[in-house]
Image (tube, helix red, strand yellow):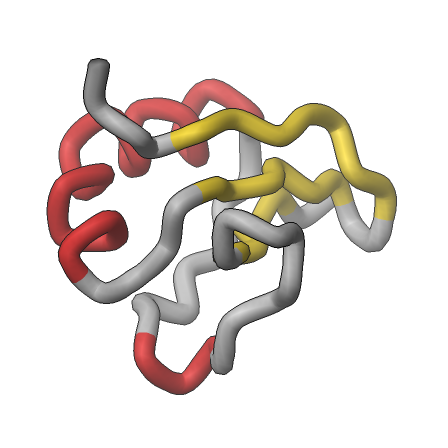
Length: 67
């Protein structure tokens, strides 16, 4: 199984993956740890939300908005 992040605008539109790290993880925990370390960079790149995908299935979406 591959776990990946999808980067999204506030309106849910999918952002160009080329501007964000193209990381693939072997476990959910690894994917979540990676985001925990890099969320600010992802946010500064323009993503306001991220969705965790297991293969092509969305597991959950979370906001990167501070506050």
